[in-house]
Image (cartoon, rainbow, N blue to C red):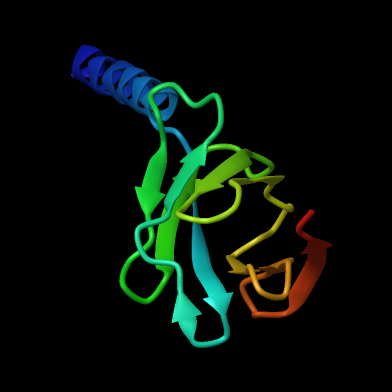
Amino acid sequence: MKNNKLYIILFCILFFSFSSFSQTEFKKINFELLYSKKNPIVGANIVVENSNPIIGTSSDLNGKAELDVKNENAKVLISYLGPSDLNFEIVRNTYLIKVNIQKNTIIFYNSNLKKIKRVKIE
């Protein structure tokens, strides 16, 4: 009986230790990409730089996209049909990123939709 309990305890320790190594924490970042207030950027590619395997997504018909990132401060590349690509680092605690090409701005919001940071696109 004692041996069975010991085996069960060892099995649980091994199982949980291996499962914790195999899990990687991802954070979902939402994007809203616009040329101007009512003109979304459709089909823009959003990629985490230097990710292996490649982590990326595309914006939908409303200019919205979701991206799962491992590193909260990851560098992101957004490519679209336009004058140039956008390259920036995600700000810590970001839930939503709004890009407006006409206003030349990238705005980072937290999960309460409170503005964290505003960056001018150069």
